[in-house]
Length: 261
Image (cartoon, rainbow, N blue to C red):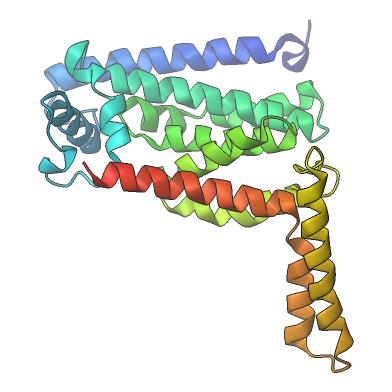
């Protein structure tokens, strides 16, 4: 008789995770209709009310306790136009996408696809994770943005897409900014230089970097502050500078635009 590990594949795991969320979505509709204690998270009702204000051309912040980006309310306008559980389906789908990203990232880091399955299952078949998204919590969207940024950085492609996605994640909620430091460490010399096609800009950067290091090295006194400054200058490669500037630009641009709401 074949073992579970030999029978299980990532596709079958995703199908099981999908069915789990479908069952919970259907159960949630039944509980909301017939039981006093509702399945739907109170925040989901807030999201839907904010989306209704958007459809009326008004600010989502007219809804008391709505404290999220207007982008979320805009994304959930199908709750008003189509059916009220659209957002739950969206969040559950994002849950599945997080599971896919977990699998791809583990494989990229050298783990075999078979070994990665047990870690994928910790997310995809976790009843608490499925319960949170199907009740209408939007955290799975943030998970997609953060893990999507990591995946794009690890694949060493679509650099500016990674910057955009990370800026968007920090706009959604400020705490993903703590992932900036590990992401910057991943942008090492093996990643490639963004100015290879622009030798003049690269030469200017290298010149000023050399002069700055020369100033720090000319003074014979060694102290912790100078060592920290030298390390900071060596760390700030063009790629890391661009990632920081581009991500911050996306964050501030979106925040400024959404502030108008």
